[in-house]
Length: 488
Image 1 (cartoon, one colour):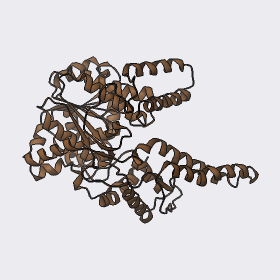
Image 2 (cartoon, helix red, strand yellow):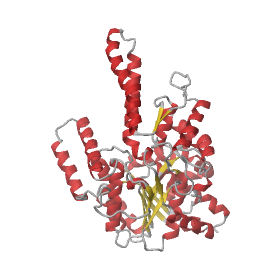
Image 3 (cartoon, helix red, strand yellow):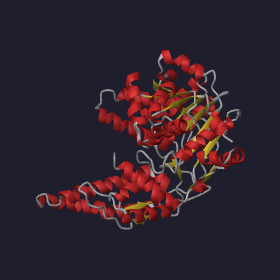
Image 4 (cartoon, one colour):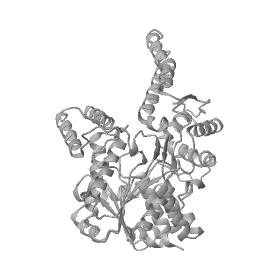
């Protein structure tokens, strides 16, 4: 009955990127449901071991996500952590993940499972940073995994949006080395590294802000040259290529989540951290920064709660540990329980009309039903009429108004800047109708139903059909987003 719970008993697990959003939920889940895990090696970036431990204590264990774990174990928690958890300082952009020699041999000899969730998820990240973490980092983790003598599984967290701006049904198939989405020839990862190095050398004496700006622009240029919309999806795609090309006999699982949202049920509903993709529109509308909804209202937006992603990860590890064929899983909802952008818009509008966001001066932000802008042309017309023309007029008259229109001018400028950035970054998700094939996930769900009882099915639920979207968004996700984003 406890097949999946039992599997993780007496296993040593290396979690890479331990302070990340997804990794926190993985760590919490293991600590809460399987305290008999042998060892949790948690790799995170820090200047030294003491700094790594400090980051773990403050960013992980003190996080509200762990309140159920703290309540469950009480005074015993410190001794459990001391026995079960080993925080290691490392860097996946370096050979052997930058681990100190003193811990390296221990990890090589003990680790059964590696979960790599380290990533930079900024869509327009500096190209040198994104390439180093998302692409080179993935290859370094694979090289490290090959040296782990007891390793059973390497699970790599990617993103469903490595497909770029394709429309229609997207299969759970691997990416081929050097194959561009737009069929442009010449994609070569070694050459991409050289381009980064050459650009950094040419910019070595420039101010840091200029280097940052130029490296961001370089990432977007390289991504769009080969058919990806942003640096994030481009570098994640190249990371997958590296894994597929050089995996050899490593038992590899690639998880491709869609748009990850707050917890559905475990350890409690509504926990989240940061603002991702659709959340930027939700918060932008609620705070009054966004008075419109750019994008095609008829498309499906693929949302999946973070605890369901983690459950799918754990079940996939336990189910496929003895199989040699690499597996790719789309973890999303568009195929089995789709929700349209229009429906999300209506739910969001209703929520903030009934529960207005409180501004810094303590006054409620008044929202009205936002204007839907279904095409890029409609967006440009809207921006011109509502922002660019008024800004030009205000720019002329504010000089003669002794500052009377200064606040209006600044507010209008901020809103148009916010809207244009949102459209630039998120257009692949609000204009393209994508459905992610999840046949592999369906087979995985069937195996859970066949092998487990009701209790374990509930513990490891990752079935999006169990989500009532109206209820989840109104009573769980948006309130959680308001709660946690307002703390930022």
